[in-house]
Image: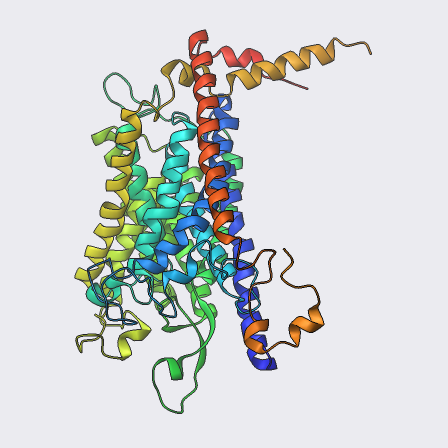
Length: 466
Length: 76
């Protein structure tokens, strides 16, 4: 970097993403607090450690292969040719944005004076990966083995969500081109897929002992510490701000990018390289949060657990189009998402005996799915991508946003890349006898031995005279 | 192992040589480091899975009741 303006732009971008990563760390702090608050006393420590250990497991696998998958898979492979090399194969050639540069043994995956962006961009996506895995973590507390959760966390965090991001977020993604898929702040790319994955695992894992009566009526278990749940959800809200910022490109000259001769237009863009503003998405974040809270308080009759979760569900539902919605549209969409998610949660619980301990499938999965579908109607006709401006390999342009494309996209996110892999992997782990903890341990509590040991320490210390 | 031993000399090189990797062993050690990292990652799974299986089997054999843990709640 030898000119000052170029250096400032680069280092501003580097610092911008770095800040989003730090903010998004709060999402994970929030999830940990939330899960401890929702679990029973005798399972606390194992519940916390399960969610904590996904951090290193997803991080190292994201370094080894997760990030590579994002850059390699936009074409499917085989579903739509790349606009870079016109091939539908995995993108591993010499193209500028090829996965070749993101192999873990390349010099760009480390301190490199020629690359100020790869590390912070890698980290921003990694924090999305943690979130995807952490969403699953909450639903399955108190009865899954840590080993099985580790495998499932790697699967959703470093494989399946990164495939969906390559398909539906990457500028060269086949879902943008063929379906007009639009999901600016990840209603589907993170939330629907993680909710669907959790549902697939829950079908195999089964409910906690005592969740359903002999006649099949669901019983309420907890949350044991609603105040910890409250603080946890506030932290998740806070981290979500960072998530929104991380989904944007902070400063970009769209004139040359769009092939407009002699025109320079600097702006923030969404991940699809179409213009938006931090100011605009701040309106929409807060209004969809408010819509979710208003609807949640009403439908749950003031229950704090559901009201807080509904704030999150409101944002999640509006996220697909929050780069373009009017704030009141965002609020109403958030409200609709909450009502549908809440009703579906209890219907699925009763009908299929699914024990989703924290409502993760509803808040993330159903609200995310509904948000994608609504986005197809409200943003019908908008360009799905900044690269809609030029012709592709066959002379056509990227499909515009449309209801059918968004509906198919929602099915791909929730069902094809979420629920189906979650179900299959849980089946395999169950077949190995590694999925669920023994019944006797679930009754006694995962922390029994730790608690017993601590009690013995206490007795020894209290009876000591020197 | 040092990729840079004098920053002034380094920054005086042609721009394409300045803009590059500066970690120890750049250009020669990356693949070996990745193999080492993967061995550590997989080894961790094997070791912790074994520990967890032993712990769960031991606790299951004791057949504690649902409320037995309450006698172990500390009040330091």
